[in-house]
Length: 279
Image 1 (tube, rainbow, N blue to C red):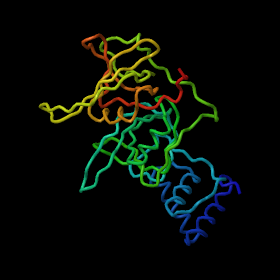
Image 2: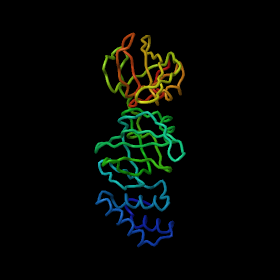
Image 3: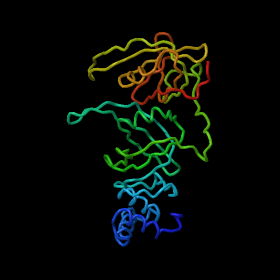
Image 4: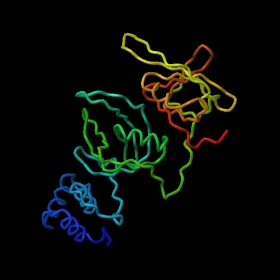
């Protein structure tokens, strides 16, 4: 069954599986289209209703993706195909006695960009996938909320995150800066390096509160440079060991005691460099 060209069949399938009448399903689909001011196609609205009712339409279902520029507050059960523009360090939180982690990322497509929030297990999944800045990903079964007038995309307990290759082809390796090309005062720096040595983390207290700092040495070939991780980034660096190839994104540079140093602050991220050559 072609689920795009046979919308009536889709309504009948949803009705038969959910226990609703065909007319009820048709009304739900029309209401969904009106809610989002015509931004949804008939099939797009039908697939959203199917997800809400727990109906599996099968692998023959078309990939209905919502453009970021078309997102509106209150949308749910939507899929977004995009590229990673920026990944931030995961942060721990505690609310009502429950502890967890959240991570914000910035995603974009040809129509716009938006901040997306990952929670707990999705953070680990995102790390395992090793998606770099500029690479494609698909976020499935998401919802849209608003905070201080700004739209946000949220992954829920039954959402999905996966790598997305355009036309099924491997994407080009995102560009990075060589450590010999670094200069003082650079922002949003991306480098591919090997961790040479890690020094123990230290806790400190300042006017802003308590924090953690860790120094480590990174290398690119025979060239080495000192790096410093702050607060949440200390935990991320500790997931790796000496000799590991990593990619650092969103760092900044400053002058240290022995020359230029790389700083990993709240905008930074460190991931396994799956594209590293064996050396």
